[in-house]
Length: 438
Image (cartoon, rainbow, N blue to C red; front, side, top):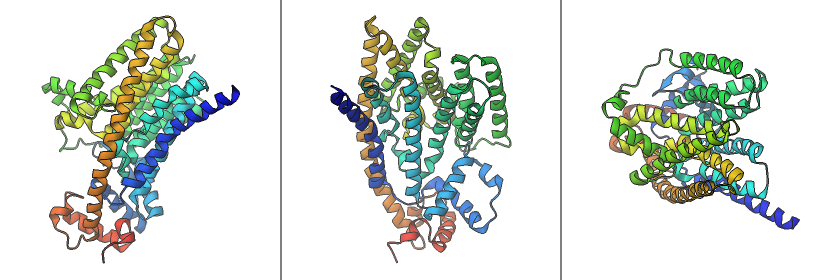
């Protein structure tokens, strides 16, 4: 019997670790070392690094709506070590995703323990965190910023859970919030989310910790928006007011995007997720379990707040963009949080009321469908992206004689690209490290 239990534990551990390995294989198969669009903005910083005249302002400078202070530091370090090999960035993001999974597992273990049953129920989490539905983030090294933002959030929640006062763990939570905020604009949402967590959690010093957290959050927001300018080429934030129906549809599709891969499936999944959140919240209130589920509720809140922020900033680009795979890394946290709330309810009341078993079963079904669809579509997208980036690498190597029409696939300003490509070639960086053309 003991051997049987051990066998099951090993089997579930294999199922949990499988998507981690699969993503590494995915990068190996489809990752291409070539600079694409926003990545060209790092080249002037690499040049400054080589010249020894980098400044704090170079790191703090705004990029679109974001202040990617920490991602810039990491990408410059990786560029220096690897010869600006973008595949190294992809594997770094993979490591960050693994750390996110580990942190979630540690918090999960504290709530549900470690047993054959608990490991079995954790399997969907691993497959969600590493879903190929995030193909754009997985295969574009620049998206380190999104993984760092999410990691900072998960890390701070894990630290806040262990902190009863302003101690070392509370300071680590603050550092996690700063990391998240200065990696991607969605990271600013960690401050209201962290405040909500403190209010909902079991800590006895809510007022003291909450006030301190709020004041630090306000300071971070003020620092972030110092000399901040809204990008002129982005939609007006008033689009939400002028087009409320389209904006609501965009929001719902974005919420459902981790499990949906088309407009109709995204919308349907979004409706189900919102319904599940409402149902789970009612059941938590009814059973007095809000405090016990503060961690997972914070995941849901951060995800919904991210979707709302994305809607305000991007809905003007059209509803189709709500399905963009780059946002899935944020929105899947809502699915993870909802699933774990439902697991907690199911564990406690499965024998008392059929509704808990039904809700748990429905969650498993939609997650299973979403995971299968996400991985299949991700493989298809990976093949397409790989072929496209291989062509781009060919164009970049021959930038001196390649038509501007093709160079604009890599960057909209071909003249700027040529100047920066000349620097890369001089120092044997990126595609010029192993040229396939003479």
